[in-house]
Image 1 (cartoon, rainbow, N blue to C red):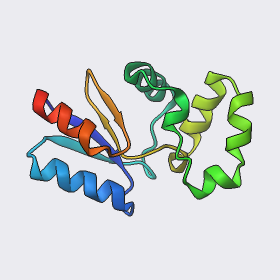
Image 2 (image 1 turned 90 degrees about the horizontal axis):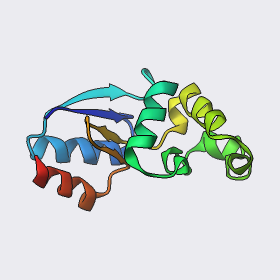
Image 3 (image 1 turned 180 degrees about the vertical axis):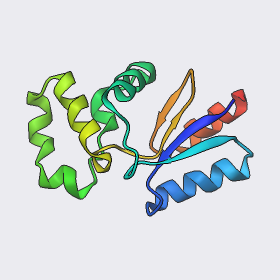
Image 4 (image 1 turned 60 degrees about the vertical axis):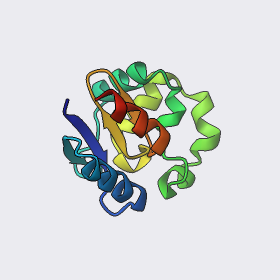
Length: 120
């Protein structure tokens, strides 16, 4: 199974995740989130597939998230508006994302990633 690995190369967490993928011989296609941001349809599919609340896909630690005061605004936005916002700028999306036909992992949680590795 080949994964889509969406990352921001300057992010230390993304670099750790990439190193983990390489060390575990997991095939992936790398996609730079700043240059090729997930679009609305991808994000809608992945959020549904993940079973996670849409808020988990936001990079809440990021400067842009804080500058836009999204902590206050997200609760007043519809899901569609939130997806449009995420699709508008890759820096709003939490990373890394690891996507397959059956799974979507958001952020680098070693326990979750090891769990999918055992299923490969």
